[in-house]
Length: 430
Image (cartoon, rainbow, N blue to C red; front, side, top):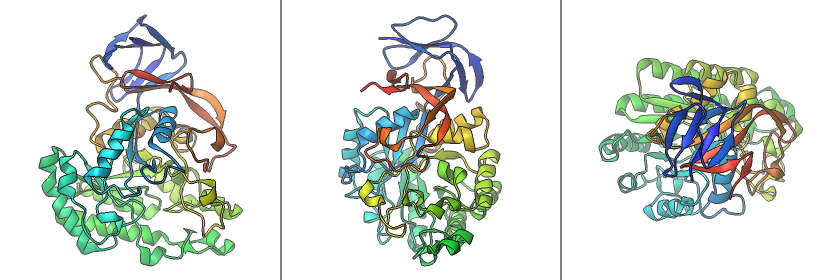
């Protein structure tokens, strides 16, 4: 059945226009114009029609940790948040470091409400001791490797992986990307929030900004040596942003992401001792938040990611130092970006849709301009709608949102994935 999105304002990488969008039953856009008709009618009056969002950093927990999240529930939350593709992290149980787990994730994702794009670990079991079978995984189409949640501590092994990754790009048909969680554990060990004024006041062990910045600096140096393409995950400090800015000016093949919580919350939130605000890297200072926002504004940071990290109440309801780190992000990301990023709407859409689609190697069908023949992966946004955040009301099996009870502006009205309206009027359709 064909679908028409009627009465919206289209914003994509080519600009802005007022037009209807007709989607055929083949999952592609048939026409863009005025007064179009189709079998299913989606009202977009007063709304923005955008290419669907692409999240470079989602923890969907399956296989092995389904009590906190599944691919099905995570994808539903993603669709409700306007996402048509989620790049999933490999810290599953077992680790996504072999063909069998990759294929399991792909099979589980076939019927999900958005595209599921697995990454794989750089090292076996994410232990940082032995390189994973990158060649075998590239042959399966894996294009991003990361030990996310654990920064690779051994610089010699990191160099070897970087050198090897450059030789795999021809086999993949595009650059192999190494995504790094930057944390020098010798400095961060024993720290549960940002090291600074608030950690001293609260008596909570802190992680200094330098724990992140030293690894960013090391990997930029190794990138210069090897030519590998690095993607820095969840940058959180002013120093890290500046290091990436200088690397980009030098012409190095580097990209970076920032999370919504790292430009909307500071370490002062930890004053409540509520473990919902415990996250790695930790919430930082006002100056760091300002630097992350500036990095997004000037293009140093290429994408907004969620680092969607569901945890059960059992894992969160502990003393701050013992609780698991991480926050939900998929359903709130756009609204938080609209409220707190400092970007205007077209720039928000760029860093949530077409720019991350390029990094993920999905730009042939995700984040594409809204035009005839393009894949129909779209979201329809009501920028003026207000809503109150409730973790219990979210699609996730977990409820650990740091924005609980906050009233936000901007809501996803419809999401279309592969031509199917999977969210209509804010409700998931299956």
